[in-house]
Length: 264
Ligand code: BTN
Image (cartoon, rainbow, N blue to C red; front, side, top):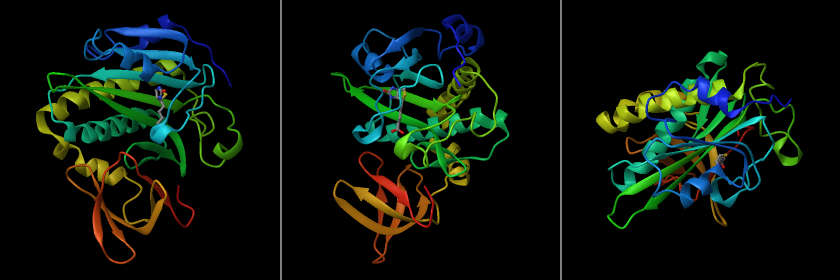
C-alpha cells in the first residue's frame, strides 16, 4: 500500500539537533549504506541519508534487502565515535533498542532478535546493517543502515512467513513520522551511550531480547551448532551453551541464529 511522501515531508518531521541536520534525500539510490560509505570523509557525524527506494539494498551476511518503493524506510546515518572497534557492536545494539523505543507509539509488543532484528509477532519488521570504515588515524566511522517495513501489504516467496510491516500489524502511520521517531530515539541514546556505555542499556536490551532462554541453531558458514541462548553479556556478545554443555560468547559479525520450535 504505497503512501507517497516528499523530501519536505521528512524535513518537516525531523526535530533532532544533530542527527539529520545534514539530510540527503534520494527518490532512488542503489543503497543508502553504500552512498554513505563512498562519501564518508565528506560528511559530518549525524548525516542521514534517506531514499524512497533502493535498487541494490543490502542486508547482513551478504543478503539482499527488499527494494519496494515508498512503502519502507530506507535510511542510513553516520557516526564517528572516538571509541575502540570492539565497542561498535554495542552501538549497533543501542540502535536496535532505539528503533524499538521509536515504535512505542504503535502500542504493539516489539522485540529484538540479537543483535538487531526488530520482531513483531515472530516476524521481522526491521533490519539494521552496521558497517565500519577505519581511517588512517585509527578512528572509526560507523554507518548504520535501517530498513523498516512500514506500509508493505504483502511479502513474496520465502519472506511471506518471515517478514511483516507496521501496516500488516494494524498500524496506520507514515514514513516521515517513523524516520523522525527513530532519529529522536537514536540521538538521545547515542549520546547517553557515549557517556555511560552499554551498561546503561543492558537491562532494557535483555528484557526486549527474544533469544534469551530459547533453543537455537547457530549457523556460521557451513557449521551448525544446536544449543541454548543463556544471556546477553555486558559487552554485547551472546552467551551460548551448545548441546554438549560448552559455553561460548557469540559475536555478531558472521553468525546467524535460527530459533527452533517455531521461533524466528
Ligand atoms: C538485515 O539484513 O537485517 C539488515 C538490513 C538493512 C537494510 C537497510 S535499508 C537501508 C540501508 N541500505 C542498505 O543497503 N541496507 C540498509
